[in-house]
Length: 149
Image (tube, rainbow, N blue to C red; front, side, top):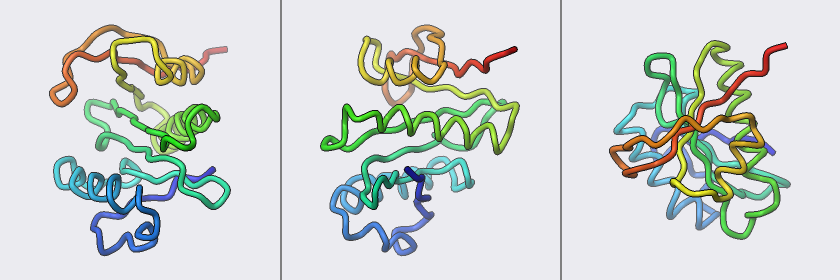
């Protein structure tokens, strides 16, 4: 499984044009999102390729602010319930810590027990509580907890 960076403009992303989900949904959203939060690699959007096929989208919701970064990911419908979301979450955490070992990593989910919650729990995230997200309304916030020995 690999994270494939989504570049800053549509014209730079022709490699994704052959996949309808990439080209028609996630790619335009990502490029528009960069206009809002900036293009600051590695704190960008990615497609996830597994066995030569694009199976998901993944992202950082902008560069770290106050030493905190939020991750986001979504597995394409045909690839759900195969452990891909759990692996993506792990990849995003590892890239975050490799880039900045001191960064605080957060994620947000709908306020209900669902697959996203289970993915975060499997990846050592702890529930912090309910917060108001300007785009999504009331959501649960989670924080990655480093294991201390």
